[in-house]
Image (cartoon, rainbow, N blue to C red; front, side, top):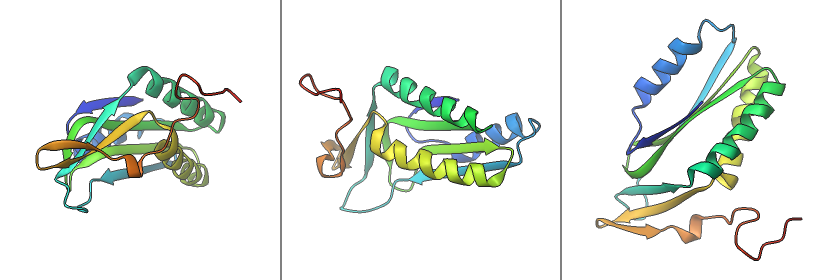
Length: 148
């Protein structure tokens, strides 16, 4: 399940709803990760742009990977502005066994940071400033990229 929200995430509502929805599905583990915008470099927050078709494809590939291990991956992310000390990202893995969930949440979050098609901007003085120094090039992006 992939959920996109305008603005910051209501962590308590999302995690409680996911728990209620899946607690009776015979998963033995429900591991979650919550990303919180931290105060640094005098930013007021972060702002996010998402290319939804690419994100949905990326997320679907993760659902397939998780399914092969008897697990399920959930994710919620913000679009637009999220202020310092608010949440912009939540992910969770449900699986019959904790080892699978612990391993998958780590793999998922790391791959999310490296490959999800989400562009991040710093909010400084009411303006969006592209966070180029903290951005990674997406594989096969650009018109002259090679597919290798």
